[in-house]
Image (cartoon, rainbow, N blue to C red; front, top):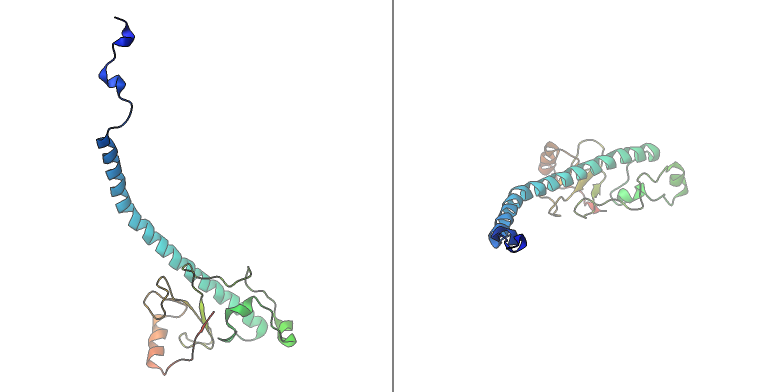
Length: 168
């Protein structure tokens, strides 16, 4: 008998069995169950760090603006003055902007506008309050990211009510 007609059953096997496929799928599900939450936590931490960095960038940009203009923008003017030249010719002569790259004020990682207030009602000294509502997008919650300390906020809560804040 010719050799080609004497095949072993193992030679006919060309793919994986259903049991092998289910086993691989189960292993992948377990791995994603272990790794997935860590990746999501890492993304949340990265978004929070990005927000803190952007707020720090606003701080240095506002200091540069204040050096040129001799004051910080008011709450009503907001952060928009960092991009738009003042219409008043005397103010425009001092303005050395735009102070930010791009054509728009950046949003926080969750797509919300940064909040701005000057004169400040939370922070110490004469520096504007800048904050993000954080991941939940709600004002006054634990996940808000701010440029003042918790001690400053505790002092503010014991003081009389603060002026109205402006959304940028």
